[in-house]
Amino acid sequence: MDPREAGQHGGTADGAQEDVAFNLVILSLTEGLSLGGLLGNGAVLWLLSSNVYRNPFAIYLLDVACADLIFLGCHMVAVVPDLLPGRLDFPDFVQTSLATLRFFCYIVGLSLLGAVSMEQCLAALFPAWHSCRRPRHLTTCTCALTWALCLLLHLMLSGACTQLFGEPSHHLCWTLWLVAAVLLATLCCAMCGASLLLLLRMERGPQRPPPRGFPALVLLTVLLFLFCGLPFGIYWLSRNLLWHIPQYFYHVSFLMAAVHCAAKPVIYFCLGSAQGRRLPLRLVLQRALGDEAELGAVRETSRRGLVDIAA
Image 1 (spheres, rainbow, N blue to C red):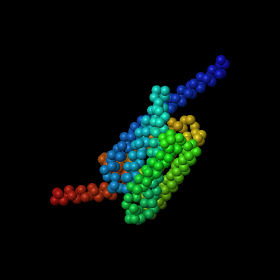
Image 2 (tube, rainbow, N blue to C red):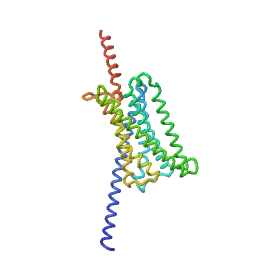
Image 3 (cartoon, rainbow, N blue to C red):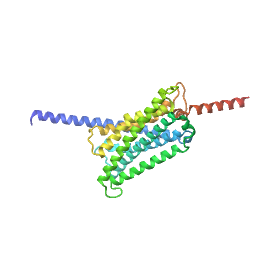
Image 4 (cartoon, rainbow, N blue to C red):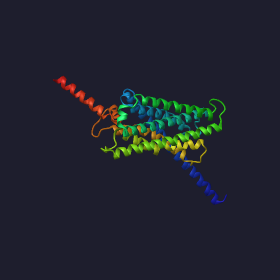
């Protein structure tokens, strides 16, 4: 064998080993972040489930945490065969079910994030309407409609692209994935536009208060999605629409999706934590939702009750 050819083969083998090592590191980080995200979103669900109806925006966070919890659970299971190549492999039906369920939860979370950003923008632009004339069950109806429409899209994709309901239709499958791509682009544009208007309103308003509480939470969550959550959607649409993507983008998008879901509870607790004081986690979440006024009223009522008892 020619020495140059032998050197090329050796370089190719070394490159393949480096790629395998890189993929294993990325997948291991994905599993660790997914586990942390499961714990964080589970804590959010547990803390918000008891007082979710005090603040309408808490219903959005509860539904987003539920979607992220299901997504991360499927994410952890789906990554295992790639983490153990040649040792463990799932049947095609299981892999397809995990893939479609992950995309379903991804679209649900994106739709809810778009809805909450637009409603928060309306609350900042029209505070009188939002506080007085806003429909009482708007948040509940919006969340229920989001889950129902995303479930309908999920069932249509499963029926057209898999053998779940019979013979798949490639033309209908491609059309539905194109619809999903248009939906993803529309939600991203609406979410970015609403967040930009919200930021401009808070920066150029008459009192110019610094972004804090729930508006700051919405802005940070939108930024988190653009940097960490969007790559997973781009990869999934590119894979099903047969668009060309780099090889490494597969594992990187999985890692970014885990970061996106795992970092949301961290944002909630960091925004709600008070400097120099240790508060219960339930109060921390209420502060993140902008319930400082309600918490202050509760504390004032408690103090007055103690003073009356002492008197």
